[in-house]
Length: 34
Image (cartoon, rainbow, N blue to C red):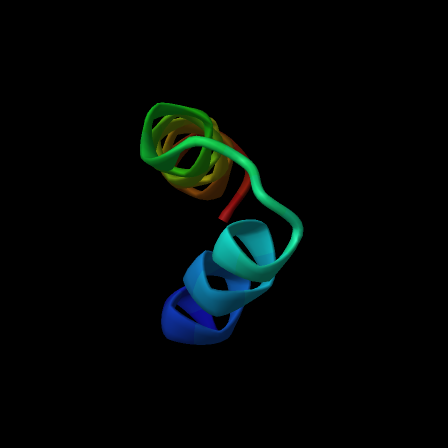
């Protein structure tokens, strides 16, 4: 899933930093809410 999101972000012209930040937030949410 993460790989698919990375590709989507690249295709939309988003920066790699934004993609990594999103993954980081997603990880924190997953750790807190399971």
